[in-house]
Image 1 (cartoon, rainbow, N blue to C red):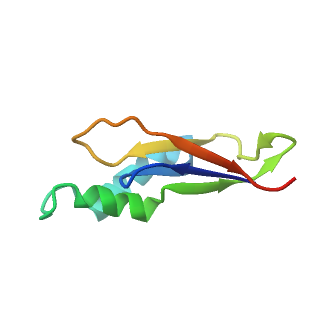
Image 2: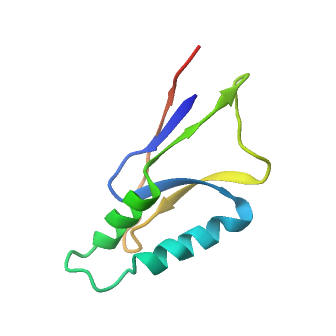
Length: 94
């Protein structure tokens, strides 16, 4: 089992079917709009929390088990700033 985590308080990791990744982003944007917050990037913290900064991926024979057509996507939920992000991968098991 591999555990992928992105460092930071506002990015997110998702596993999605390539054709549905945009729909996930649109749904989160509708749920948590960019405007109307007292804290300038509160929406980014909430979106990151809803989506998650970590995902588990099963590994078999040194390869990730991901259904065909699915992708692991890193989402930057802050629209104002560009950041360099680091993904940490922990491997568990034998």
